Amino acid sequence: MELIADGIHIHPAVVRMTFRLFGDDHIILISDSMMAAGLPDGQYSLGGQDVTVIGNRAVLTQEPETIAGSAVNLMDCLRQAVLSMGIPLGSAVKAAAVNPARCIGVDWDYGSLRPGCYANILFIDDNLEIRYMMHKGKLLSHKKCRFVL
Image (cartoon, rainbow, N blue to C red; front, side):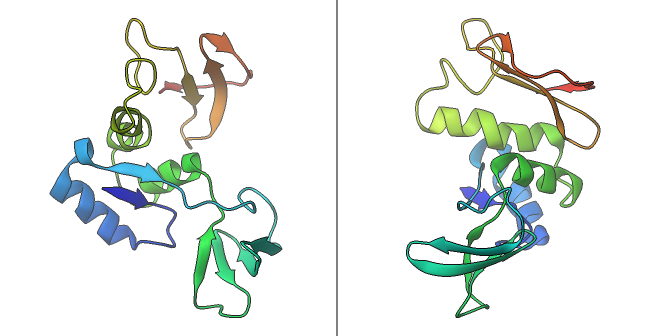
């Protein structure tokens, strides 16, 4: 089961209920992000349609009640799930990293930390902000951290 935990597409209560009903082994966190993800509020285009982005919400400009996608990335969805929706960090990480790798059959290299896998690791702080990144064992950025994913 795929969930967009951006706080826009699916009500937080439904996200919590889905984790309780199906368990974190059966959920994959995804993002319906568009090119405006991470960019300031404003006007953008998606598939030839005008889109207005305000905060995390991206709607069709001509039909403002119609969601046009998401303006957040997967890390933002994980952060939202944990900090705003009450999903345990371990469950959210499993749904964002382990389960997607398993689903597409690349879990022998990606999605977890065990011998033989690539050492792709995010080091995050208490607010789930990325402080360090490691890609295939190589450190890519330097900031203070507390947790390891």
